[in-house]
Structure formats: C-alpha cells, structure tokens
Length: 242
Image 1 (cartoon, rainbow, N blue to C red):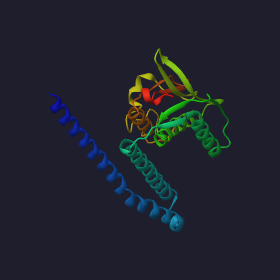
Image 2 (tube, rainbow, N blue to C red):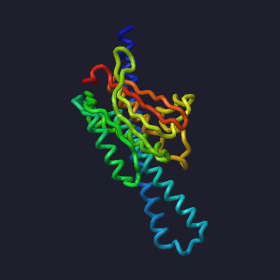
Image 3 (cartoon, rainbow, N blue to C red):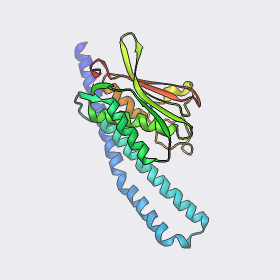
C-alpha cells in the first residue's frame, strides 16, 4: 500500500510539474503576438487617428485596452506559475516593515488619496522573503483598490489569536467588502466578485496568495460584509511563526 501511495504521489507531482510548465510556456509564447497587437494599434492611433471617425477611434481604444489587460493577465499567470515552482528558503521576515514599504509605494502612486494606516510593530514571520513579498503586495493592493470609493479609507495590518494555539496575520480594510456566500470563489483563479468596470483586476492575485500560504504550510481565509470592508487572515504553518 505504501508503495502504491508513493507511486501515485510521484505521478501527481510529475503531472503538476508538466501542467505548470505547460502554463508557463503558453503564457510566455502569447507575449509575441500580444506585443504586435499593442504595437501596431499604437501606431494606428498615432498616425491614422484623423482618418477614423469617433466610432473607429473608440474601437481602436478598446483593442488597446484589451491587449493591455491580456498582458496583465499573462503577467499574473506567470507569477502564479512561478510561486508554485520556485524553491523556498525560510528566513526571518519583518512583515510590519514590509507592509509599511508596500503601503508607502501605494501612497506615492496616488498622492491625492487620504488613507488612514495602522501597522502593528514587529509582526515577524519565518518564510521565503520573495514569496511573502508577493503575498503581502497582493493583499495590500487588494485593500488599497477596494477602499478607493470609501472616505475616510482605513487599512490595517497586524496579528491576532484565531484559536488557542494559532495566531494569524491579517490585512483589514473598510472598503466595499463582499457577500460571504461568495467567499468560496475568492481564492480560485479567474474568479472575481466585482465587475471589471467597477474595479480592475484579473482574478489571479488572491489565488497566488493562497498558493503561497499553502506552500508555507499555512492557510488563508476572509471575512467581510457588503460595504463594511473585509479582513483577510493568513497563517504560515508552525515553522512560519517567530
């Protein structure tokens, strides 16, 4: 029985690697024609826009936006593939400092926004620094995006006890939130709870976050209410705590 289990595990591991490699290759190979679409549509807009009527220019703009969105989607798929395949190395990571850096980057990108930030000090984890940066970046960008229509906006990062023997990190916001009946879709690739015209995104970010948490032996879950904000909590396994 043990031999059969080991053989089956090896088969599944090999199949997963092949699938990940296939996804990476497909995403990579899509870049060349996509660059052509974006490049030639840009030239068309630059040199022939005056020959088009308003409807034609509108169609051209939609082509460019679609190409750019596909480029973002490819980048996100490649990121999801990378975090699945990347070899992990665990070191001490100050998630409080990382949260502060990422939120500062967001604030610089939108200097007109007023967001009240609360970062608990010395939230230390033990994990892969590159993967944890991707995890935190996705959660913080998520909070930043979904508080865009909230005034005043608030974003918080810290830790809290979730059970007698378990402490979780959290990212909390007071943004648009979501209905908990759809929470099961949050961490599935390409699933989105809001329309693209309301909030931009590809539906890959939270799936990437979940993959990183699972690779560390942890988990991630969310609680929210419509128009009352959301809290994303994650753990990094027993070896992920300091």
